[in-house]
Amino acid sequence: MDYQQTLDYLFSKLPMFSRIGAAAYKKDLDNTLALCNALGDPHLQLRTIHVAGTNGKGSVSHMLAAILQAAGYKTGLYTSPHLYDFRERIKIDGQLIEEQAVVDFVANLQPLLETIEPSFFEVTVAMAFDHFAKQQVDIAVIETGLGGRLDSTNVITPLLSVITNIDWDHMQLLGDSLEKIAAEKAGIIKKEVPVVIGEPTNASLPVFLQKAQIERAPLSIATQKREVTHYEWKEDRFLVTVATPEHLSLSYELELTGLYQTKNLLTVLESIAQLQNLNWSISNEAIAKGLRYTRTMTGLGGRWQKIAENPTVIIDVAHNEAGMRQLQQQLLQTNYNKLHIILGVVKDKSIDPMLALLPKEALYYFTKSQIERALPEQTLQQQAHAAGLTGNCYAAITQALAAAQQNAMANDLIVVCGSIFLAAEVNLREASGR
Image 1 (cartoon, rainbow, N blue to C red):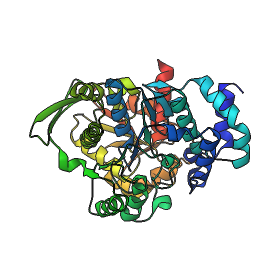
Image 2: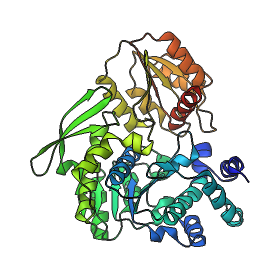
Image 3: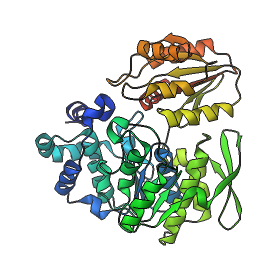
Image 4: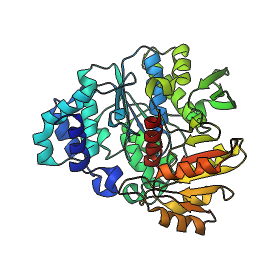
């Protein structure tokens, strides 16, 4: 198989969560361990940082990777899902895994894949571990896919575990209470491995403390170590001032400009401090550089990302209740004349709480991504109308974006949100137009 045929094989033959939802979720680590065993257990050869959480784990993973790169370490980065290129999931120092490496990996394991029928995610996790081990990275940042305890990435024993936050998402798989969801995320806490908690809550913190005590894992809470004292936007950069444990005031220039990055920044800074305690050489200059050039160094997209001007078009991967709360706060801090929101969601999300958080004065363009899990735009429109949101339906994001750009004036704001997969299709459209 060539590269395209290999991708077609992966996408069509293996169960894929983004396409079919819960049916693709494997509730054990057996397949991942079998794949890794066939590869010589590459996950045991790696030094890793393991990142979980409901929201923010992608941004935190990319910021950590950028800082480690800036510090001179050869850094692997595994994240999911991808926006427009499968190879985004597996990077070293910001460079995508080579097409031939993907082809060779699948060809080598195809007999085993046919036998054990792993999920798409299980295969990509094993591919990442194999690639990072072969390329002898100094360290790899590994983002969980869903949950933690039973996530395929949870076969590693990292140097550091990071849990960004806990909120409502994937309840049908992770549990119907915040305590149950927290318990699943807490599954990445390992024996005597330091763990950083980004945003503790009354529901989640007791769960994390209990798990850390059982595992004798040193636990630190990012928001208790530092606080953001000031922030402002200047020429498409986000300037954030942080008070440190030593009562210093440090300013950072972030390439990721969403307001919610203030929370992620505190998590990243405490994670770096823990790595420094483990004798990793990471200077203040490396921290500043990694934060200033996160998107440039790692290729992260879709986090309050401006892709056009006059009118301004923003894509954001907010796709659950917590994400919409963050988006709501961002809009309150943003100047615009009239607001246009292009919205598309997937069927297995709890949609009504998201809709309740969206501004009623905006003009809506209801659409869907081109995957099986996507909620039909007419159904979304009906639910949105019941929540007081009005707008027309469009069968594809290309049609919705064209309509919004035609309707909007130069000083209006267009925001694309509701689904990572919707953001991906905007990226595809923008890439093809360049």
